[in-house]
Image (cartoon, rainbow, N blue to C red):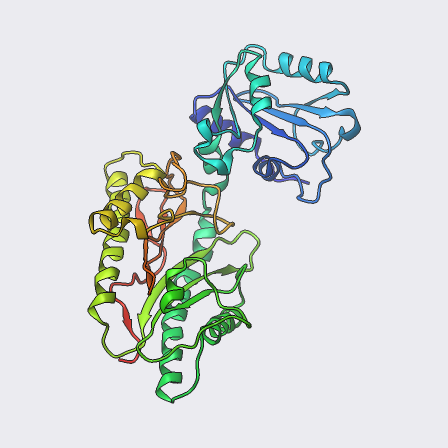
Length: 396
């Protein structure tokens, strides 16, 4: 019934020098645990359960007598409880002699994406004399690492969406050259049609923002709300897609263009700052791995943010530098973030993430987004075949 890999998890626990990993859920509160433990999303959970995986030996399932069968697909001994005293006794006995474990917890809530266990449960487990560490890096090692098959599946998508974004600017040129009416929504639907031709999946239509709309990071046109695109307008396009393979991973990029035959200096200036921030962040990661040194998500954000701050535009860069990419667009690995959160998770081989700094002014905004993959042998590469080096002069 399940592809649950106990050996893999125990190897990760050993690598992190822990005694075990304790999973906890109450009424679906810990989606990370449910995913790792292969519990279907539609499972109707109404009682607490714990699942303890020691670094060696058999796991323990602590389940309520009313819902005693939910973990039957997992290995380990089943310990049933009915009242709270029997629950506490099972926990106490299970954790006897255990010194340090991981749970879905983040000290000071620094990484809220992994803070799934409530404070009271943390207090309860600590009462048994156990030291609790965050499972953040374990989750990355388990859920954010790409397989060779996923990388091969992703590579052509990453290349094709670059072609699609270039063709989208060409679509704008064709319309404007013919004197035809064209809008943000038209371009968005053009891209969606290109996705359909390639049988790609996206969870929502792409962002196409003109002028001041490009300065809103999460603006997207709708059938009811959109702006026309005219000559000499600034255009930002952010698109993301993957194949319909259930295990496929995302490609996600942002490019910018100007609907004229040459790009005014005010746009070039801002783009060059953003591109420098993007490239310095990428080069920082590459240098760290080339020197066999660890790198954490917040450090990458710091590098990109310093470039923009030093140029005098720090207040106009108001989101993190990048996000983990897995089967989820915003995945379970490290985010490039020392702004919204302080993400201290490690960047790991065989994982991917975006680098997408931006400067968002009232009249226009620039974001330049690439996807980065760290190969199993620690080579740091962009997944696409093209990185935007200058603003597209759409009418050229």
